Amino acid sequence: MSHPAPGGIDWAAVRAEFPILGREVHGKPLVYLDSANTSQKPRAVIEAVDTFLTRHNANVSRAVHALGSEATEAYENARRRLATFLGVRAEELVLCSGTTFALNLVAFSWALPRLKPGEAIVLTRMEHHANIVPWQLVAERTGARIKVAELTPEGELDLEGLWRLLTPEVKLLAFAHVSNVLGTVNPVREICREAARRGITTVVDGSQAVPHRPVDISALGCDFYAFTGHKLCGPTGTGGLWGRRELLAGMPPFLGGGEMIREVRFEGSTFNDPPYRFEAGTPNIAGHVGLGVAADWLQNLGMANVEAREQALLAQATAALSAIPGLRIFGTAREKAAVISFAIEGTHAHDLATLLDLEGIAVRSGQHCAHPLLQWFGVSATCRASLAFYNTEAEIEAFAAALHKVRGLLL
Image 1 (cartoon, rainbow, N blue to C red):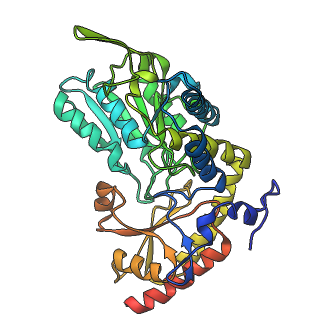
Image 2 (spheres, rainbow, N blue to C red; image 1 turned 180 degrees about the horizontal axis):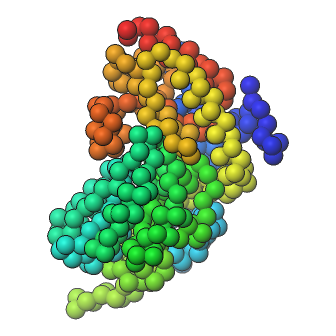
Image 3 (cartoon, helix red, strand yellow; image 1 turned 90 degrees about the vertical axis):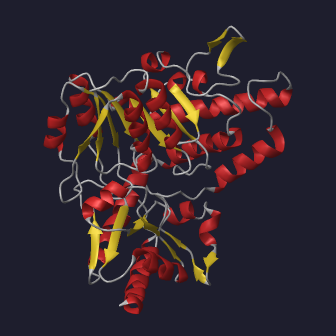
């Protein structure tokens, strides 16, 4: 059953905009609970990509013919739409393949030329590998070291411990806005304010925040903010990096090639201004056109409505799972997004996910690209159910019933 939000939204009608949610899996209705991995796409996004490819397909910024001009305008319009959605200026928004590329761009273009032996990077225990490995690579090359901010047993960031880590040798702090495993929502403004007081540059991984809550990057006080499009109802291979204009202007190119230059001579090249300096080669034009439409579509729906809907579903799912004997939920932060990582005593996560799939329930199992976090919890793998506004109360009931059933089969 769909319950209208305070704004009068018909969530059943919203769900109907997602064609894939009407299919069956193994003869059962699909219950898709893996939106933290990738979101499903509304019809408007699918049609936007199809229309671009069937009517406007050409390369950007390389031709004066009609299709080339249309493609360039569509691509730059997507940048403007995303900038509006995120509360930033378009000229500070680098379009790229997603958060992983964006974080590597900051690591190799900002951090690598600046860090020195003895200096430090602070990360948190809850980070995705994409916000760990690039900094490890940079630390190895520069002689810098990595310090780790730890968590409370509930999966919240230990802020007092974090402040103690922010000593004078720390030059960069990189952390998730929302944990992809725990759902923990970090107090970004407070963290960035404390870092700025100490002259520390901040990098925020917004992959799990931007799709699920209102995010006004300009109000957060961070220096860089990365996000991924395919979790934002957009196509895969899309996303962006926002950076302060003065920081982007002082960064050398990460990749060399076409469109990131003003002039090329064998004696040397001069580079374009940001953000184009960091957009070498032919981009995923159709994908970003679709992402621009996704941003508009979500903005029309209202991200506050999205967050409220998902919080209601999270409350229902948490209560249902907490009633299952032997089930442990990892991450019980006071403020969390609609992500539930769990394990059932005596079962393996992969077995659990496999049997749930046979019931039509799609959850992710494994380490969720967060090995250090799961090691800290002392487990080798968990299942993760991640909700989105297009899920329903009936799906959560079906999920809980399926869990009871497969638990009985495994124990």
